[in-house]
Length: 155
Image (cartoon, rainbow, N blue to C red; front, side, top):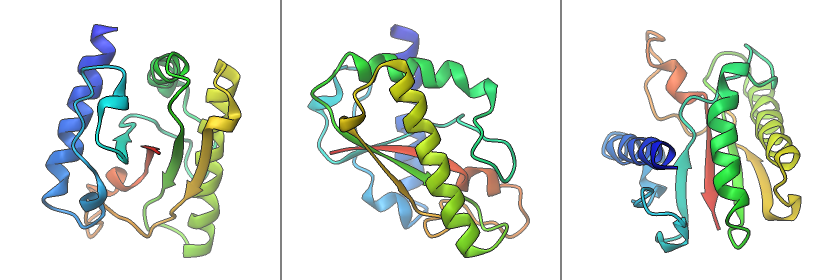
């Protein structure tokens, strides 16, 4: 539990650190994720699940992401009072329409993972943002991976 809380704290600092440099991060509220339950956060709070990866051009979750998803699902399952939206984002490679569909499918894949873990599906909404909310410049492609992300927004 302490390892997971520390990881969330690091993710929170990364999210807050990005807030100064990107317009998409302006909607992220600072939340002290080392103190569960996160219902004490100012809502809406956004948590970036940094490290959730998918196969290229696919909504298939990379097996290396299972550990973080398991820890996230475990915490969310223990707090049934929290409702949330899973938001998928893509980079700008490919067409806008296909990226929109891909981001929606990826958010739904994470939702299915959480449901399979035992989280009530009525607590979870999904949304795809496609490539509309980048957090990193994609000019040379070195930071493009930051735009491919999953966020959890607590209602």
